[in-house]
Amino acid sequence: MKTHHLKLILTLWFFTVGSMLSAQVPQLINYQGRIAVSDVNFEGEGQFKFALVGGGSDLTSSALASATVFNGFVVGATITDGGSGYTATPTVTINGTGAGAVATAVMDAGAVTGITISDAGSGYGAEGTTIVISEPSSNLSYDTYWSNDGSSANASEPSSSVALSVSKGLYSVLLGDATLANMSAIPISVFANSDVRLRVWFDDGGNGSQLLTPDQRIASVGYAMMAGDVPDGSITSSKIAAGAVTADKIAGGSLTEGLAAEGSVIITSEPRTDLIADGFIQMGIMPESNPWTATTLTSAPAGRNQHTAVWTGSEMIVWGGYASGDTNTGGRYDPTTDTWAATTLTGAPASRYIHTAVWTGSEMIVWGGYASGDTNTGGRYDPTTDTWAATSLTGAPASRYQHTAVWTGSEMIVWGGYASGNTNTGGRYDPTTDTWAATSLTGASASRYQHTAVWTGSEMIVWGGQDDNGSLNSGGRYDPSADTWTATTLTGAPVGRNQHTAVWAGSEMIVWGGYANGNTNTGGRYDPSADTWTATTLTGAPVGRGEGHTAVWTGNEIIIWGGFFGEYLNTGGRYDPSTDTWASTSLTDVLGTRSGHTAEWTGTEMIVWGGQGGGFLNSGAIYKVGQSLYLYAKP
Image (cartoon, rainbow, N blue to C red; front, side):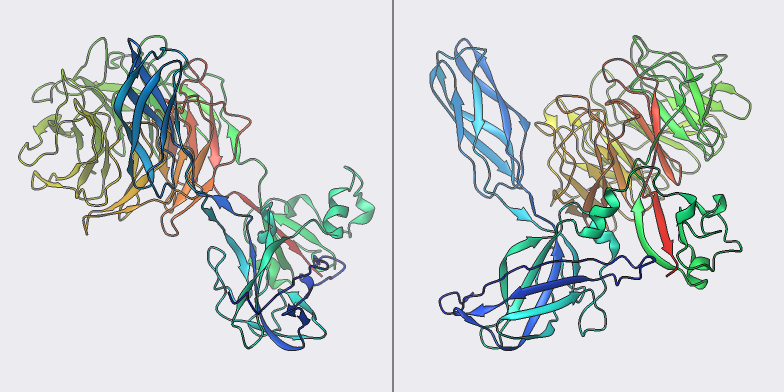
């Protein structure tokens, strides 16, 4: 900016917002300001650009670590949070009763991944010795909610300007007035954000376009304050036009006679083209206050964690797990009726936990796990007849737990896990013939457990996990038709981790979270067709978690929820890979904090159930993604 000879003075005078309801006030923001160049009021036509932006969020977070002390010497350090946004290696300070300990940080991708002790010092106590890692430099990120031409992203300068007349330094504009060149309408959804600020650029025709600072925060206006002060029950039937609001016009009711009256207001749970055709205007979209609904506790299975769950297309089946001991009980939950039915114990496999389960289209197959020792037994459960059939032991893989299993459409593939040590063996189970076939060892990924696996439609991709040497960021693609393995690239792969989650997103695998020398909130998207990785953004990502969280794929986004990060969590996030953006899940007042639970996507909603959080839980909740209410009004 040429600030040495150009002085811009911005004065915010007032904002007013109209609502286009019965008073038919235009949905505009009236903005007035003052411009001075080199302390002289500007006169003439100026070029302005406008954007409504967020207040800015810091992309950085500080790393945390704890010290390991032995006989007065600092012998090691454990990263409990790698932090984010470091552009230079931070300093590490060791505080305590001793002296002389020296350490340096190890960095990767803007996070602290380790600490090297170069001098153990002496005289340190096991209690009271702390490690302090310096904070990263602040790095603010801004969101654009609206701009005059719709081109601004991340609060950047719009491409096109709006020409306005300035007289004696004063100018006025109706923001959102689409009759002006290069001015787009302002959607009501902008003001669903709690912190909205106006950012302005000005070009006097000689000094180029320059940003006016600071951004001006938009506060509540008179109309909003009046609406917020309306006492409950004060809107009576006498204030509503006859026939304007009936039971069938609320939450998706059908359009009937009587809607022609002016001043009619209708709230529905879905878009209504019939209302628009009848002369209504869609005023806005409002998220429901709480998208969570508790599942019934009546007849629910006993509380547990580390169990499995599958979605059949009409109900969720949970089975096994640990509830003050391993169990072989389970239940079928119907979200339509909010009811539970127990799974039979007759013929059920032995009690177990940290096993796997897949849904074949007609049966649930459970296999492996820990049942007073690792096992290679399993069972097939038919919910239509409430019956079990054992899986064959002939040719079955060795006993194991913390392995993975995927369903290909015709067979179940189990792989890896802990079987008296890490393993890279696996097996393919055909339920129609009750037979097993081993997976090839040629080119197979290294032995591991606590990894993830997804099915792409033609391949199984395994990734991450841990072996005797620590966490892994390697993986492999297994083609069952050819019984062959292909390694996944290490270039650009996320840092090694275990206890993470992974989903198949239609064309790529998305991995997130887990334990990577500490809990992490990093992730990556793997494209098997190109054998390439793309990191998931850290902006707005949920807090890192390395144990017991869940992930489901909705068809357009991944939902992360729960887990453990020093405490049990009930937070989560929704990640959209098409925009590389995160949105927080609503905090629920019906579902307690937990980890080791399960989550299933039904096609329209996520069902969370069980887990551990101050005890073994048999509670759950349904999360409706993007549940919105649509407001229509007839002027």
